Length: 111
Image (cartoon, rainbow, N blue to C red; front, side, top):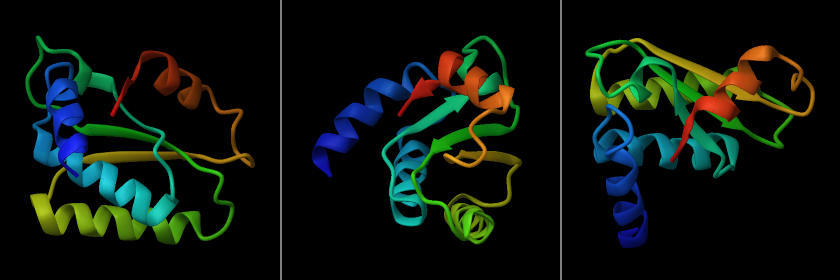
């Protein structure tokens, strides 16, 4: 956990989210999608902007209950950080051809 905190503090300098938000996202991604592949993309990676929704990309090998996992992730995130606009996209082997996933992988900041 201490190692995760050091890494997230470094990442927090590249995105407009503090390390507590990033830690929550990482933990929930692992819990609901059993993955370490998580990226923040969109307006939150532009350090010159203010506000904006939180765009989260997760890649997982999980194939079942993706919608249920997304709802649980978003519910737990809201419990910890309050109501916010969060766009959570989840790439699986079944839906991997969407353009938004390529954008998130190429432009997003890995956390």
